[in-house]
Amino acid sequence: MSMQPPNDFASMSLAEVARLAAEAKLPPVERWNPTHCGDSEMRIAADGSWFHQDSPITRAEMVRLFATILRREPDGSHVLVTPVEKLSIVVDDAPFVAVEAKLSGEGEQARIAFRLNTDELIVADADHPIRIEGTPDAPRPYLRVRGGMDALIARAVFYELVERLVAGPDGAQGLWSDGAFFPFDPA
Image (cartoon, rainbow, N blue to C red; front, side, top):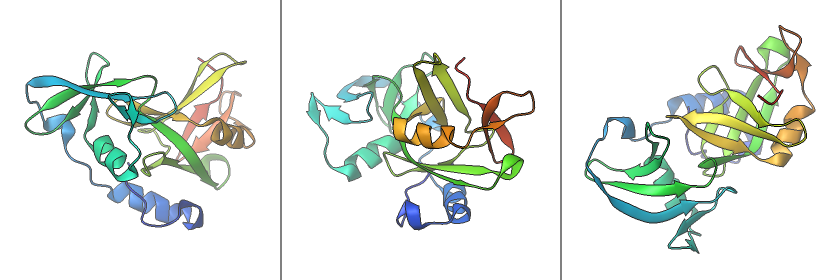
């Protein structure tokens, strides 16, 4: 679930964040299948910055708008799609970055909400899992956002999560959120 927060994320309760995330309404990009029309000449850098013709897109409102029409194709590529056109876009790593986290509860009752660089809100759960790739020395943490697209969890946020690790059902270290357990061992 995702949405744009109306208030300061830090001042919101986790229940408010979860409610807003559940109410999010995004365009039905998965139902739009126009013929591929070309290249958007856009790129999303590994740090979540958006570029058009190698110039940064600095208007946050434009980035948020484009993010709502972003879709991952079955072949792993990304496109910006509307009902009448589909334009390719280069994504260096993940199209989003989780820049802030809010944690509450303990054990199986815990819940973790994330704010993305696009101001969308995601509650980690079975449909929005956290996974760790890479190696123990160079972990790459990700959060599933939607439609096969992920958010790279920013390093500072990842360290905040690591401080809260607990032993899971099989003894692996990880975190619970919304009844799902996410091991923190790189795959």
